[in-house]
Image 1 (cartoon, rainbow, N blue to C red):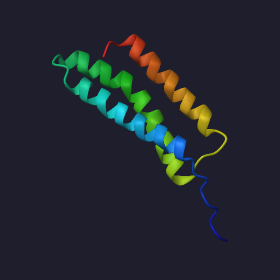
Image 2 (cartoon, helix red, strand yellow; image 1 turned 90 degrees about the horizontal axis):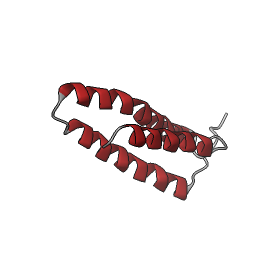
Image 3 (cartoon, rainbow, N blue to C red; image 1 turned 135 degrees about the horizontal axis):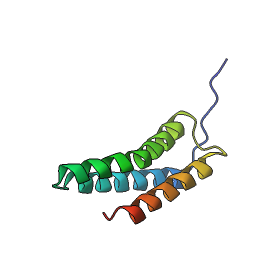
Image 4 (tube, rainbow, N blue to C red; image 1 turned 60 degrees about the horizontal axis):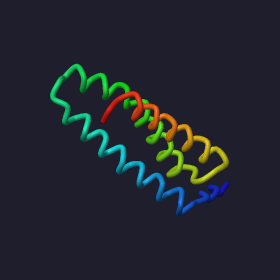
Length: 89
């Protein structure tokens, strides 16, 4: 049975790419924190946000753009905003 083609979205792909760069920047800022306890606290809190984006990226690579993509990305954005408002970085 032939494999089904992935549905691609250029705008969604650019959102993922921009978000990956944002995650990389925030991760670098967290690694620059001198205090080990604070750095660990920030890293643990940020790991949920990073996992969400990783999940989005993997799903897009494997399946492509589908009906759940927008909801999943909205969840990621809400999680990121929650992290930014709770932790000053």
